[in-house]
Image 1 (cartoon, helix red, strand yellow):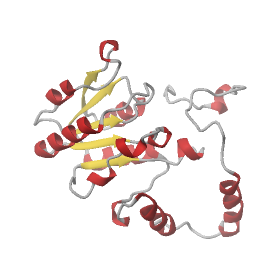
Image 2 (tube, rainbow, N blue to C red; image 1 turned 135 degrees about the horizontal axis):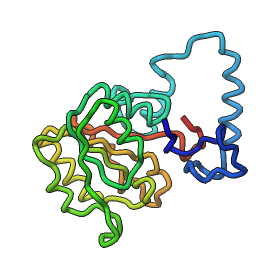
Image 3 (cartoon, rainbow, N blue to C red; image 1 turned 60 degrees about the vertical axis):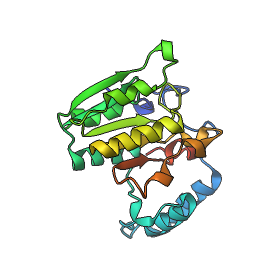
Image 4 (cartoon, rainbow, N blue to C red; image 1 turned 135 degrees about the vertical axis):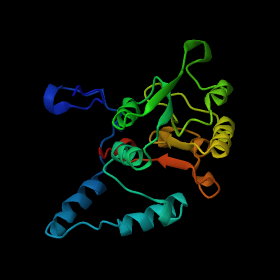
Length: 213
């Protein structure tokens, strides 16, 4: 299969890799030391419940522990979600992260597209709401969008979320680049999880902490 994600340094052996959006400052020394120390436990199976991580992350982002699910990177969680929910129809924006389409194609989902264009600065407008119809099962948004980099206003995100709740549409929001925003809390939807059981949010250690996968 053609690799369209980027970051395949093993095949192409580049001197510099600009195809993957990883923190240019690299991995913090404290993380590297923790990885070294963990080798002492290499003979033991890992904690499948991710207990310590779950507890610490729950406190950090103010989300109940039972709301958290962990995987081998956000893409792994994406494919797991799609396989679990098996949406028959889904709506994507274009252009956006290629693996949303790959995951949906893996279950033969009917994919529809909301095309971004230069006249609106490649941002989502309220016209997006007209694309939310009762026959949709899932939408996937990326905020800020990868690779475009634009954000969706919080007010419009809430409108979309409420409309999806009314229509029983699962709303997936990829916030993996949120930590790079100056006003990141404005664009987050974590506070809406309690009231919206149709909302799924992706976050990752990959980008900010340079922990790919």
